[in-house]
Length: 261
Image 1 (tube, rainbow, N blue to C red):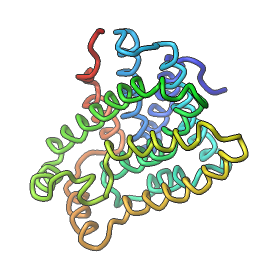
Image 2: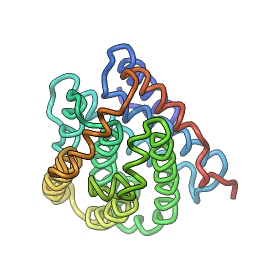
Image 3: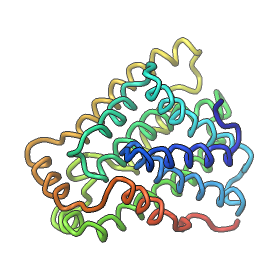
Image 4: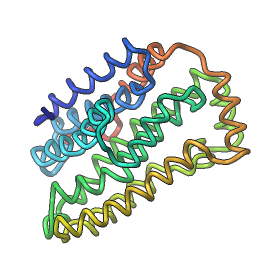
């Protein structure tokens, strides 16, 4: 049964990260980060930063359930979106660096799931009223993920060196930008909100293909990008359980976006 409250979401993410920790699975990297994003959203709701805390809890649950359903179906060998399959399949491989795993999950969840969630939370003419809270929840998301990326450059010096030499590793090498993805997600929501269920599904099938292709670029950004990423990978230290613990610890800071209204 999928979660119905934000606390249920946190408990389910705990279950997945605990399972991944025991099984030494890289499938635990993204939910370790996502758990902290969800905690920060909960703190934001409690601090009253949103126009409607009730609506944003509903938003958070719908958003999380898209990931949780994909994860559970993947574990059971059931069909899932192409975008999530790219992310989950990469977790079975040794070469992707930790940051790539986080970006692959973020790619599927933001570029595919986020716009869908907005359209489902506030369908039709309700959508414009969501924009302010949509931007706030994305501010929490971006600041949490950026904070983790910054901390990872300190844990693995080669990643920090690469970040200093080429700039933002995620955007310069993998072509992924959280801010641009957020903007695209809102445009997706605007396209989906007025559509019927049948029309919406047709749009989503096309979107899923595009997001999956972006995931493949994140995973394999070409010869020069792969050469740099493999150097970083060889410099990464720690077991899978240790890295999951690092992600949970390093992402535990309260987002700067969470300020009482």
